[in-house]
Length: 428
Ligand SMILES: Cc1ncc(COP(=O)(O)O)c(C=O)c1O
Figure 1 (cartoon, helix red, strand yellow):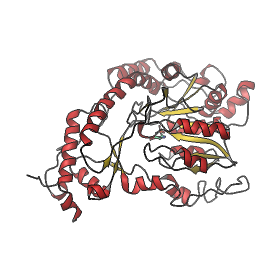
Figure 2 (cartoon, rainbow, N blue to C red):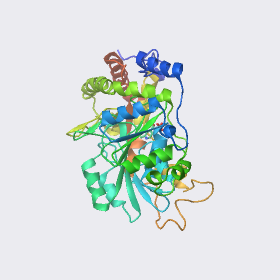
Figure 3 (cartoon, protein in one colour):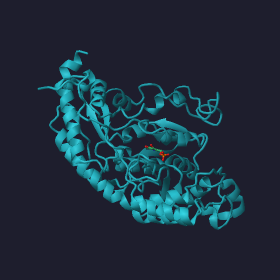
Figure 4 (cartoon, rainbow, N blue to C red):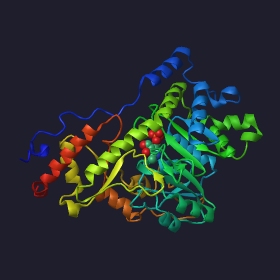
C-alpha cells in the first residue's frame, strides 16, 4: 500500500530531523581546555617582533598543515573568506586586473577579487564536475587576466591538466578555493596544493572545523610573507620590518586565528582522513542504492582523482522522473529530508554584479579610468551554471559522518515513497 505523502498530510518517513553533523570530541575539548587554562586566547601583535606571526597553537597548527599537505608554507586565518582576500593581495592583483572564476560557488570566491579592487570574470562550469570549465576559461582570457580562481566544488577536483596548461600558456596564476575539498586529490596531488596558492575553510559546516577558520598554503615564500602582512596590519609591519616584507604596497587587516581555534583545528586536521574515509563508505552505499532510480545522474568521479563528497551532487532529469525538481524536493522535505535546490544562484546574477555596484553608488572597479575592459554579467553567459541552479541540481548531505547506512535507508524509503506518488504530484 502506498502511504500518503507527508506533503498531503501523511506521516513523514523521518519522524524527527537527523541530528546535525558534529564531530567535535574529547580530544578537541582537551586541546581547547588547555588553551583556556594556560592562555592566552590569542597571541598575535600587529607590530614587528616575535608575536607578529601569532602564538604557539597557531604555529603548531600551521606546521601540521604543512606536514599534512606537503607544502612549504601555511598561513592561518580566521576564515577562508579572509584567506582568499589575502591570496589575491599576495599575488599583487588589484585595480585594472581581471581574475576568472566560476559563478557556481560561495560568493567569497568572487568577492575576494572585488575586495582587492580587481574584476571577477565569470567562466562557466563543466557539467560533470561542476568546477570551472577549461574551455570557458580560455574564451574569457583578456590582456587584463592575471589569475584563475579555481574552486574545487562539493569535495571534488577541477580539471587541473587543462587549467595548468592555460595558466602556463598565458602566464596566469592559479588560486585554489579548496574550502570544500580538504583531502581531495587530482592525479595523486592534494587539491589546494596544485595552484600557486590554495585556501581551506574550517567553518562549522565544513569537513573539519574550528567554528570559524581558514588556512592559506603555498610553496612560494613571497606569497606567504605577503599573506602574513594581509593577515595582521601589514601597513605597520612592512614599514617596521623593511626588506623582507617591503615589496609593494599592502593594506593589512585583522584576519588572525585565535589560539583556541588553532588548537581545535589541529585536532580536527588529524581526523581528516578518518572523516573522509567514513564519508566515502556512505557515499558508496548511497550510490549503489540510487543507481536503480531512473532520471538521476549520480556524481562523476574522473579517473585518477579522489572526491571527498563535502556534499553529494545529483542531477535531476525532470522529463525522465516525470515531475519538476523543486516539487520533488518539496515532497522530500516534507518526508524529513530537506535538500539544497540548485546549490547557489550563479554569482553573476546577484544584484552586486547586475548593477555593477560594489562600493556605494560608484561602479568601481567594474568601470572607470583604471580599468580598460568591459566585463559582461548578462544572464545567459554561464548557461550550465544557470541550468543547474534553475532546474537540474540538488545536493544530498546524508553521507556525512556520523550519519549511518540506516539514515541512508530512510532517505531511500522517502525517495521511493515520493516517486511512487509522482503522478499524483504531477497533477498538483
Ligand atoms: C567554496 C567556498 N569558498 C569560500 C568559503 C568561505 O569560507 P569561510 O566561511 O571559512 O569564510 C566557503 C564557505 O562556505 C565555500 O564553500
